Amino acid sequence: MRVHGECHCGAIGYEAEVDPARTIICHCSDCQAISGAPYRVNVPVLAKNLALRGTPTTYEKTGGSGARVTTAFCGTCGAAVYSCKGEAPAFLFLRTGLIAERAALVPTAQGFCEAGMPWAMDIREVAIVGPRP
Image 1 (cartoon, rainbow, N blue to C red):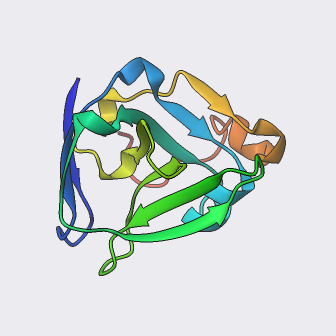
Image 2 (spheres, helix red, strand yellow):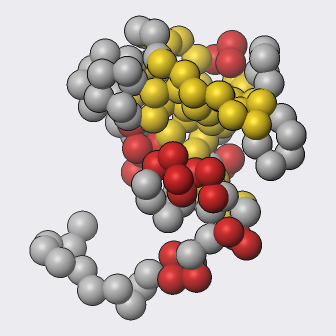
């Protein structure tokens, strides 16, 4: 599936070819801390299938696995664009919130659930404020 997206201010943009069936929810504590949210939704893209416009700022840390993890974000608006592992990654994890076609990227799996917020696993009973989508 061909997707395109950009950060909130438009300084970073991209086009990519992704497999929507590989969309995943990540509940790891790093995703929670970096995003300020209970989880993050990602879709992997082969590095060769990503055309990036602009130069993101990066933040590197050592993940729980011992691998170097890089998070790329817009240095102006702060929107997270992608993350990847290692020095020359074969693929990157795009943050679906920036993808224009995000409604079609329905998660098919979730990981690091042991770090997840118990209430985030089923929010059907949480009241909806405002019009229903």
